[in-house]
Length: 638
Ligand code: MIG
Image (cartoon, rainbow, N blue to C red; front, side):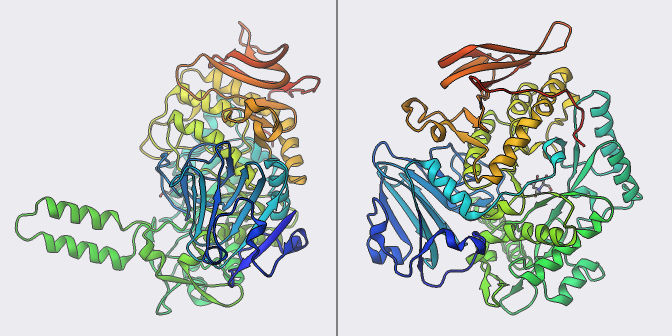
């Protein structure tokens, strides 16, 4: 049962497809008595402040792409899509804004705050026994979902927000990426190494260095002569190239995308009605106004340039949007520093200089200085709808692709997102680090994102920032083979982490091979989850709500309807404890003395078990009585 309440005149976000209007009861009057455990007054709620009591045993789920674990109790989260590569425990916002939470207490209920501005979720942070939700702009829709158990509520929510994006089958293969591949030769070398070592692969990603001066929809001629022929050559080797597209467009007369966008009025404007300018990779850049259909259709149609060359997959980046600086504020900062250069600069100047320089990037002041023309014709300041920008970039691409190529499937995923973005494409989990703690976070985040509809998701395997080690890469891969998006990606300047650079290529081949052997199960389970509005990867508490033991298990997940996975997420561990909530068989995928693939199945197990998991093995658990057939080793899907 879903009730919708409204305060003021909310901005329409497209979180819920219009055809799903019949799925909730639309209330014209805010009835706060409908909310379990509510502690705020009617007036407070109208002002965007919702307080709930939490009992000691309360658990809170949801919030999608956020730091920490699966039970979100004990921290404060703030939704304001942020380009921030430091995903430490203390972070309040990452790239996505997913305002959906489920409270499991004496009574279970779910809340979706459909508000594209900043919303804060204080979940037992200020007071351990309070959940406080505060919206900066109180004009919003609130959906209240009742149900017996969290998963019951989540399934209603997934149905409400519509069916998840289904990528082409080959997108379930392995993709290799690195910020720094900048020529056809680089890419050929990556492919050659994988093929020679028989490490399965279906995709190579192209990061910003393929472009001509970071101009979207261009390909640099010097390093990629005859790009279409190169794309064909790669397809012949069963490789899909997946280029990145950034949100910012280089401000440069003569660059067709810029000229067209200016002429069509498709870019965001400042308070004076001039095109808003901020710097990202191309230097001075302008920003397509994805908030209206005209601009979306225009931008979406530009992907054709690459599609015509044979490209069938894209990743959309920098769409929070990330802003390195605005020229106006950079100038101010430089003037300030120059002013301090007189005399003998000391400690005060040091702090002033670092303060004014460090505050340039992604600053609220800049987000408050440009405007969107919305679909309904109204003009809205960016910060009010900040959280919708990335979703609408991906929507622009997805809708146009569907219109122009109705029979073709594209791989498409985004960095920034809002609830509802899962219908247009997947998301990857942003700039993580080569840390064991981030492998652990990847497990929780994948479950949390599934709760919000994002089935096609995965993190940068091996970690994006910092230097990976071979054991971390192996353990990370052993988890990533279970996530729909499986990609090894890393930042320029960090240790190179293509699998063939390490000694134990046999193990990498073996583990990726397992993904391909499991593909029928993973792919079928994905389709099943999408069609039936279910989660693909779930915490145990959703499947076994009456087993007290599983309440706080956050490092095991159910995958599809038959298997349980229990990744090893700590360094120098030879195995781990695994709790099995029902009778299961352990499936161990290993190799014999001659290196041949070997599948071992255990006796029936249940309850607590210490499981030995050497780096060379992948282990998972199959429900007793269920079948699971592995297919042959394959080096590519398509
Ligand atoms: O400012 O394109 O998250 O995956 O490699 C950094 C370069 C921009 C951020 C993305 C990352 C990508 C990087 N990008």
